[in-house]
Image (tube, rainbow, N blue to C red; front, side):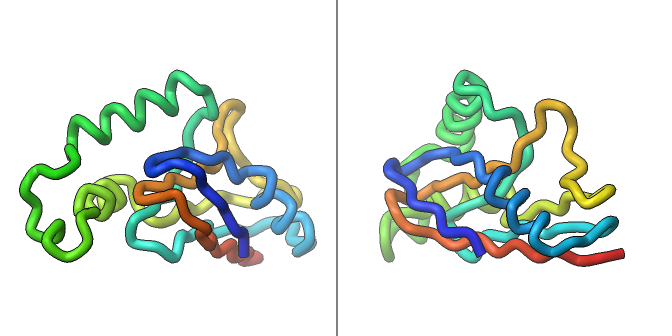
Length: 130
């Protein structure tokens, strides 16, 4: 389990190194790891950890799902945009393990996406041998 503390309402945090540490502790030569967020207003994605791209991701989410656009769920806790954005991004990713290491592409990083922060969140990492 990884704990992620965010400081903004919408924020993208690179968790690759923490996932890598967990995978290495399991001593699995070949398999998969599932990285799953336990929250309905967060997501996990794989992409490049470049500041401009992270800003672009946040900006496109704001355009696709604007805040306070008359969503029914806003009557409850005023965060419907966060839930809807999480649906678009997804709550988990699967990464192969090859020769005991995460088999990511050159620029690929595992990113936790906070959509209703700041908060402290939990991300589950399951390592499955094949």
